[in-house]
Structures are given as structure tokens and as C-alpha cells.
Image 1 (cartoon, helix red, strand yellow):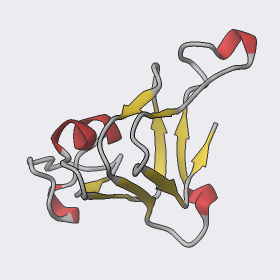
Image 2 (cartoon, rainbow, N blue to C red):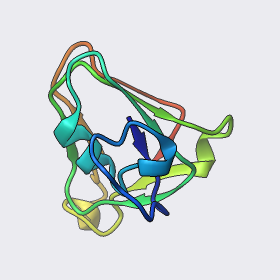
Image 3 (cartoon, rainbow, N blue to C red):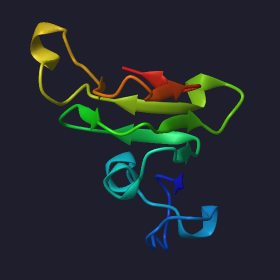
Length: 101
């Protein structure tokens, strides 16, 4: 599965970069156990933490993790400095190669 903040033709099941979801949440909603979600470089603002309840891999698609940013700076918990980006609710969920803030 693919996610791209600049996607213009988001088409489920988001199986190519040309039909990528605009949000990680949209891809997570359709992902099944064992799926890999490739996240293109860009800024992905969220207002609530993303719950990952399936055994999926979420991978930033740039060698530099600072180019793929998932930010909860405007969402829940920001005022007290405890902004969570992901809740990993599955022992086999995996997030790598992106910046969380």
C-alpha cells in the first residue's frame, strides 16, 4: 500500500504510488495483517494518534527519515507536551524510517 500527502488520484486499495492514499489513516483502515504501507516524503499532520491494531509495517520511503514527517503538533496532548503519534496495539506492528513529532 502507498501513501502520499500530495496524491491527486487516491484510489483504494492504494496499491501503487499513482493511486496512493492521501493519509496514513486511510491506508490503515484498509490494511490487513502482513501489509506494508509505504509513506512518500511529505508532511502528514494528524489531530489524534493513529492506532495500529494490525500486524502492518509503516515505512518512510526516503533514505532520510526527516523527509517523512508525521506530526501531532496540533492534536490531542500537544499543550502538555505529550503528543503521541502512533499507538502500536499489535506486537507485530512496525514503524520505521520516518520522523514523529
